[in-house]
Image (cartoon, rainbow, N blue to C red; front, side, top):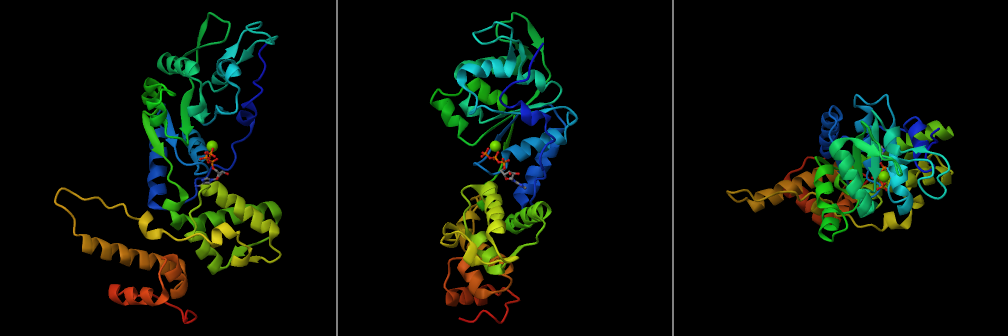
Length: 344
Ligand SMILES: Nc1ncnc2c1ncn2[C@@H]1O[C@H](COP(=O)(O)OP(=O)(O)OP(=O)(O)O)[C@@H](O)[C@H]1O
Ligand SMILES: [Mg+2]
């Protein structure tokens, strides 16, 4: 009789946690459309993105929207399984296949049959196993350790990494053929600092989740929100989620003010403009002055909106002195609903 794997299978039986991809930044709207498109297929997907950016949530969405949704989603953290056990974890083993293999065991691939296997931190997979994975991807058969019989398994493979797999390929640490086989459809999850306009939405989402869990009601002051907008979030959405939870627990008041924010957030410098420089020079060149004016206008508008019309806060968001900001505001002719509490 087969027994369950000791490592990652628990997650497969659990109902999927909240897998709503929150956000309406254009990059997320595009990502959602891509998710929908690949969900309908059985194609192998490679998800890349910084730590905490939402790779697993994307993988779960692909599964949940796919015809495989009623079957298992099996997450496998390749970095958490000892190398010598990984093959048996993935493909199973026969009784007596190695010392300690007293019972036969199904592998995670079998558990994901007609469902999805999520190979997280794929860059950590040992080279020898990469060769075996490639074979499975190619012919759809898995062979348990110690068995000479290959069994057909229909598992959809989604892999993820936060490291640069191509450079691992160049260093000989990752097989080039597997890299191309995995990234039939590459899915890139952008870091949070490249979609700052989603921060208020995500904060509300996490506040709501805490409200449901803890039974209180919280909000952030506008100033606190401005600081959170300016911060670069190296730990991405996970860092934001954890911070919201921490503040909710630590705050005596329902309204969380800037004073409660951790120092690394309040001392973070804003680099909004540089993060929005995505312009490319086309074949016919580019009107740099017009482009800079347009970018300036857009940033000023966005900062004012974010700061609720407070010019001082908006200026801080853009790393400008209040006087410089006002001069730019006049020049750009931005019509802002600046409030009166922004003298200084
Ligand atoms: N767009 C989003 N909407 C709601 N929650 C999100 C979003 N993105 C990420 N999260 C939440 O942030 C946390 C981190 O997300 P996830 O585990 O998917 O990131 P990851 O890229 O897999 O991170 P790591 O590289 O560290 O494994 C999770 O709790 C997830 O629910
Ligand atoms: Mg992850």
